[in-house]
Figure 1: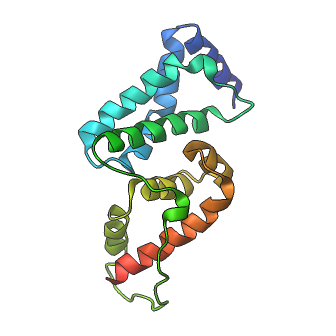
Figure 2: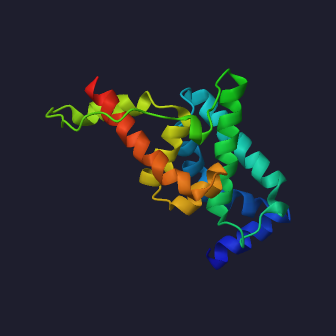
Length: 174
């Protein structure tokens, strides 16, 4: 964390608008993209992004850099906000241990529309799966950071990523 970021967190804790603005500008897009990876309706995404910052600023006194980076802490709030939104709309998440996917055969696809197929397959994943891919491959986060965001043990995440890749291969082939 930079010295400026630390100063802006302190400023926001003290209720200074400058701190709020800095943090929203610095992390707004990251939060919005994570929520969009889970929630399909952009109107909901915009509203939930605002909710995340309201919650974060309300609980800023509970943030401690020793436990997680500010980015990871904020991503956890965004992830939980999106998940709660989905649950309130009838979505039921499954624990990691209950997600078992069959392994598809390893035939490769020779298709010029491979990226379009991959995008369509990703759209068919569950919200937690899309958010895991987003955090790992779009944001480049470590498994430790993702475990902190998703509040799960680090060990199962590598297996879960492998299962998601297998699932994507299966979805692309079908």
